[in-house]
Figure 1 (cartoon, rainbow, N blue to C red):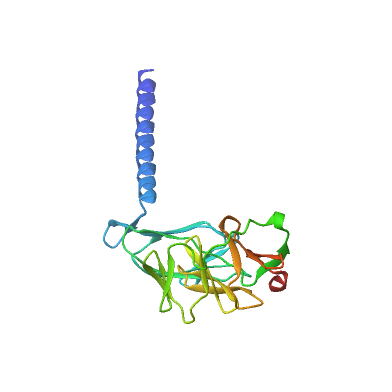
Figure 2 (figure 1 turned 90 degrees about the horizontal axis):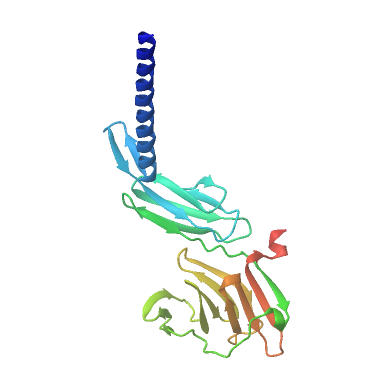
Length: 239
């Protein structure tokens, strides 16, 4: 009986030690994973890695890192990157791809919020009840100015135009501008400059920006209202 009790205590002690060891191991793994650490067997050390956080603006987009497809959905976190330069591209059929190059330092977390605009956005006529109210305004939003073809936003140089636009509007961190009869969307984070509408004349168009719905409205003197759905590819481009 005594021997059985002793063996039982020994088994309990060994089980406890194993449970504690397993807990410490799992805890260490969790800490390493959360901290973005990788183990280098050559130096027997843990190294802190970097990460790129890819946000979502359009569902079903693909993520490429250095020209290799790594995800077919967004948002997506690219973990365990060593310090260095990385080329990132987010694309989807029917949309203008967004590309950006990062030079990551050790432990850096970079964020990329791609602005995916349809290659040929859907353009349609809408009733006044389905459009925001147009309010007469200057051709340049408050704080925007143009000097020798350079766009300044509250005095900060944003870009240089080869042909000076007749109007510029903010669209979040981006801009909608008109040059000649072309209305264009300018995404400075990816250096994309996309034609979104060809107006019938080169006169400054009366436009209203609806950032929340990714729409631009154009108001004609005859009462016609045109809506441009920036993230809805036209049927022609989808076919």
